[in-house]
Length: 475
Image (tube, rainbow, N blue to C red; front, top):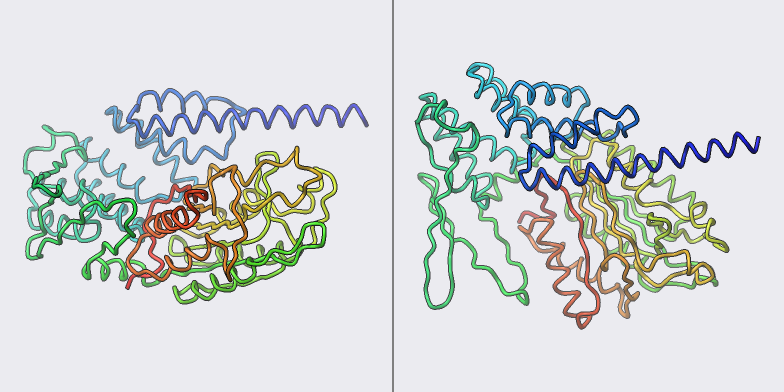
């Protein structure tokens, strides 16, 4: 029996090591893709896919990125093969896949097929206005090259209305040169006019025909709060895009810990107030306070069920937690009120893992975006195990389609607060009330104010790889 257990441990260790190496190679390949090192991506991901023991969870993304890379090095048949393979894995970003298939068909001279694929791309990306705008701008070029000037003008106008802040879209101009003389998808031209005066610089982009050009905001100093950037027409277009969106939130606040850990003043108040504000932003909220481990598991099960049964790509999930949290062996754990941790291995048994249980379950659902907010970076609640617990929470990686917000930077801690709410949640509640801010702007607003009010001692942290846009409040 000991020999069997020993062999099993060696096997598990070897598998874990291979998975860690695959993850490292994958992250390096994605970084090269973003740097437009496309041949390097092809070489790296081809080597990964050729390994019989590679982590199959990466396959969807490996074919996704390698397929696009093949397009950029003019290997259109190979690109189509990878993109088709990716589609069999039920990928998240089907809009981009069909878009690249359309571009490949265009390059291969298959005009009718390209028209059909552009339509498929727009149908698949209809809930993501940024991707939709890019596809429309690219199709406008395709239509212009093929003599459909009216259709091209219509596509371009709609693209600029959907995403006026993107210079690739806003600065697009149409041309009618033959497809054979230009690179498909790469022929967008950005016209940037810079006006200088004694006080500031502005960047202007051409206005859509029949629509007055909105003034571009001047960059604000770091000490100024964010101002709403969306005009009425853009707000209206966004509202129409997300009118059928379902929003679900699980909000948890733990305060009443046992005497060994000590009571926290703010988390229950924090969770209650966040739940109230989220309901005002059209979230269906499940609120849980002073939760035991079993209650946390059951609440997570119900939350996951909501996200799984929500309409695909029209569902948003938000998880908020205030209370004690710890970092142990590269995992962040939420501390239930009944946790009785005497030894370091008690943490994995008695505390709730964020990456494996919260984020993983949110990803395995129909949600297009997963928002995780952790106000859980207080002092170490288990001093007897201080050598095994990292300071604060660690940054989580490999969270596709997720926006993760921390009350303070990874490895740092924050105080519980002196008023009704902790400092972080206090500023979060204020920012959530502001209309026409993207999710990124909301949390930048929070960071700026927390940093100022803490005397530069508490620096909040966000980690994001979301694709679409999200507004808590549009107006």
